[in-house]
Image 1 (tube, rainbow, N blue to C red):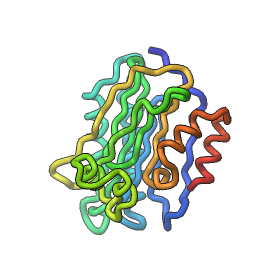
Image 2: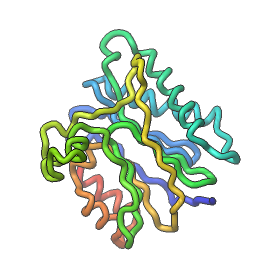
Image 3: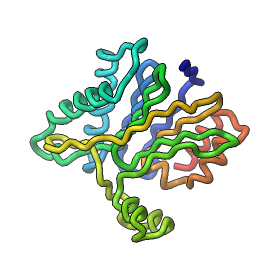
Image 4: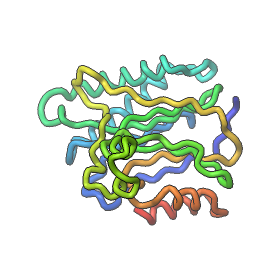
Length: 227
């Protein structure tokens, strides 16, 4: 499968937060990574930056774009990222962590992987939402079990409690949910975002924006204005 990309666009704004804990990275217009750090000032950004940079390093050194990219390759890449995080097992930084969203575009389609509550969307204008990652969060688990409603999930004071994250020095390393996407057609959008963006727009608003006749640059600008 040959995938041709329009120029990828990104938003990396501090928004309404006191400090920027998100990190983004890409390699060869094939790998895209977004991480949202946690652990407080100067800790979350270390975790998110470490994972982003180490994944790009691993892909540069180990991936042959002419060969299939497998779940085993993804596991090896994440193991490398965890080993880089493990250098922060002492002091205050040992309590830090980060979410992960990752897209890799290969010859067989797209591999999407995520840990935490940052999201990946696959949107097809005129058709709607084809895929949305499922948050690893306490409120989503409560919603799935029927203990709270969808509306209660959106407004819950516990909505920022996540159930999976990448952290240093943990014995049982959290694994990602992984999906292989092969139903891809011209005009599709893949949107990766942290919870800071999710708090500003509903899914319906996102679908309306991405399905509009605006240029990609105009759509990106509108997303910035929502922060």
